Amino acid sequence: MKFGDILYMIAVVLFAWITFAIIRGNFQRKFDEEGRRRDLVDPDGDPNEKIENRNEKLSEKELHDGE
Image (cartoon, rainbow, N blue to C red; front, top):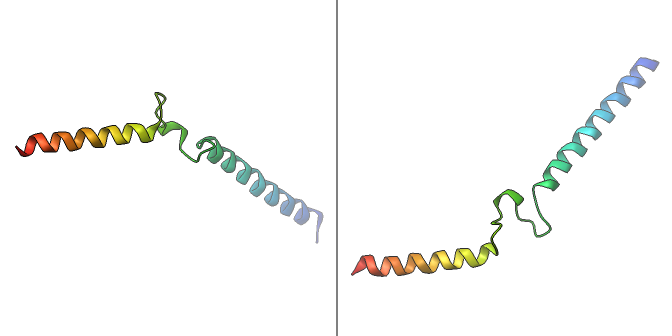
């Protein structure tokens, strides 16, 4: 193999490794320790509590609309 071929193969491997590292870093920054997306987490509190409250309100509204 010529020196140029070896250099080309090294460049391709480095490009693939750097691309993988960048994509992995971007992916890891989007999620917190619990696996939830950081941009979708409610800063005011527990998202599960808010969902339960919303479901209760919807149930109450459906009861009043049915009468």
